[in-house]
Image (cartoon, rainbow, N blue to C red):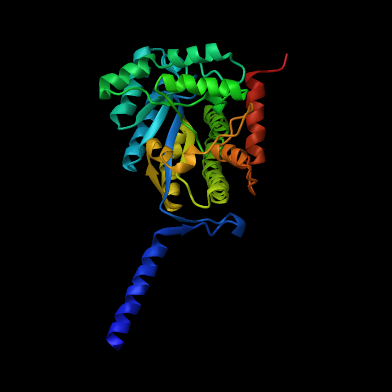
Length: 336
């Protein structure tokens, strides 16, 4: 009898250890933002393909793209890259841009439509906006068909502006359905475009110390953003839904992607596809947001469900980063 009791006791201990090893606790955060997570999932998406920095030299664009794809494959992570076809000739040759998109496909990734010209729906007439969608799929559609006998499936709104009114939003979503597209939402974003602008500026001035400092701050900011969005998921859905990360195809993400993906894994995330993430019931929740901004779908769902969360979106980058970003913008577009 004692032997049986011991075996039962050992079995219970083994089960408890297995459960504990399958979950992570964000112990470094305040109690209010700690989330115990079991098998969390995140889908990866990259905007502004083939490359976000339109002034980057051809060698950088090619090298950064190769790095991003190599790291994704090393982590067995699938990603969707959203294409602005007006950027295909930024390196001086249309064929170079098309070859970069082909490399994404041959690395096992998918391509989506981000429209031609990266025009927003807030200040663009619906008819012109729909034309930008169709103009922005010409090469992508051919590449997908030639490589995989597939058609483009996902559309992401530039600036994630989904419409200045309910009517426009509804009409455009009907247009997307008629053309075989599904809206690609995001739930996690951490101002990578801000960090990227300051990072590129530091490298352009040969300030490697500043660039290194930015990489550290950028990765730390990801943790801060994840803590907020995990909290929102828990408060809205009482669980951790599959998240969708939005970042851009740029040098900063090429230089930090290995650390980013390792950080996500250490936090308990496995990498899923956008298609699988959108299959979660949470993504059928009504998007209750109308406005100029393009916030996380977690905030949109909270609006639609009339749930007030304890946090309202990712925190801003540190003051010194925002200050330098504003300076860069003013230098690029000086006041008259």
